[in-house]
Length: 309
Ligand SMILES: O=C[C@H](O)COP(=O)(O)O
Image (cartoon, rainbow, N blue to C red):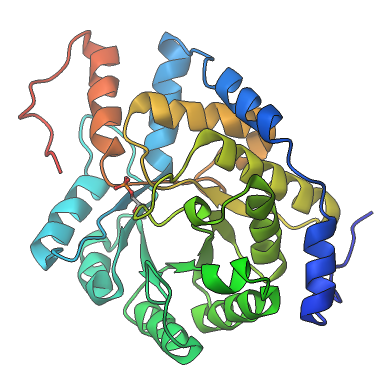
């Protein structure tokens, strides 16, 4: 039997009562479980499959003030032609003004274009600007929008404001998928990570994402674990599946595989596809490709073989 949460957001008081009624997170338990799962090792054939799966889940990202059309085109070339039979990544992720460049560069490849919107990374602007930012990115060709929540509103208990902004941005997305960035490094507690996850899902998020990559800590294993528990429990209770995207600080193949183990052990294998799990990262693809080549040839390619970021 599934539960309807239609009335949960009737007022800030009802939303607050629901979110504060969620079970508290056992901080020590979450840290220990994430650390324990991080020690699992994967060998040879399984590792080769895990590397290809991880590559297919990457949102290859450049989010710098100094980004240029040339840098975005080079990133898109790597995304669409990673080489040596490696799969393409899931998406490229860029600022809204570079969406058109990215969309043209990945056209026909199956690689999606994701764009950060809503005044990323701070989110400090009016709802009107956030909705316009979103609509312009979608109009320019974004398949996916990565929005940031208003952490100031969340931390001061104005959950309804956060909820209503997500609803409005989701409407502006049209057919584009919406990833909601919680910026967990600013949420102070694991209980808040769980509450923000539920808030975003109740408001219509297609994905929940840990971080902008501009705040530390970012995608830590315990935080990703708590978000995976949230999407698992949300589907159990509502019948709707929501994806998860850890982002920020994922640099190595080891980091990527730890994430896959977390998914397998927490939400389950239904999430082990690029439709439901992404790795937001600017540089992990290089290490995945190098480790992939090491597995197939027994040696690392020289540093000039891969285009480094
Ligand atoms: O969304 C992705 C992040 O911005 C990338 O962060 P990163 O540079 O730490 O990989």
